[in-house]
Amino acid sequence: MLDRIDHVGIACHDLATKIAFYESVFDLTVVSREVNEEQGVREAMLCVAAAPGGASWIQLLEPLGPDTPVGKFLARRGEGVHHIGYGVANITQALEAIGARGVRLLDQRPRHGSMGASIAFLHPADVGGVLTELVQGPGARPQTMQ
Image 1 (cartoon, rainbow, N blue to C red):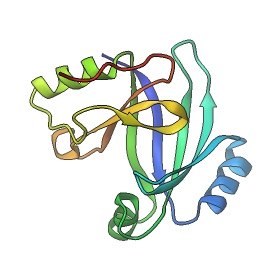
Image 2 (cartoon, rainbow, N blue to C red):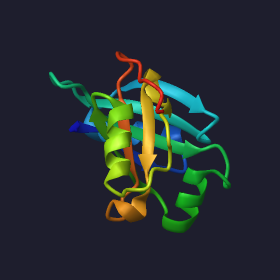
Image 3 (cartoon, one colour):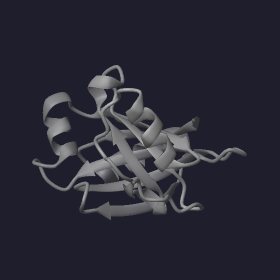
Image 4 (cartoon, rainbow, N blue to C red):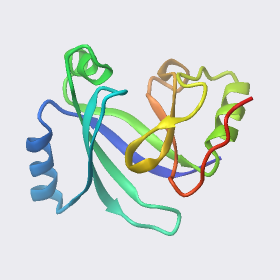
């Protein structure tokens, strides 16, 4: 069902400073920048490696305000790993299968994610304390859940 680690989401206070760090230390380049009002973040995607199954990314996340999910995360835990995103071929089927296995879904149906992907989050309490994101790349359009 999971076919790769798609990205690691990292919460930060200052997106520009964190981008400069990843560019200078790891020679990564920003491929995409977006503001996602729905999720309350300003973000940058940096490509780590392109592989036959899909690229791997570092997603840097700066909150749009202190009352956003990432803003609250930073206040509680400080900068660091916010979530892990796993690639799936069909996000709707993955949500149905994972939900049927007793894992609570934070998203009952896919929503818009970075670079045109469809995404959905799983409850961290049911996944070993890790906020887990499912990611279906923009190539295939997910079907809505019944």
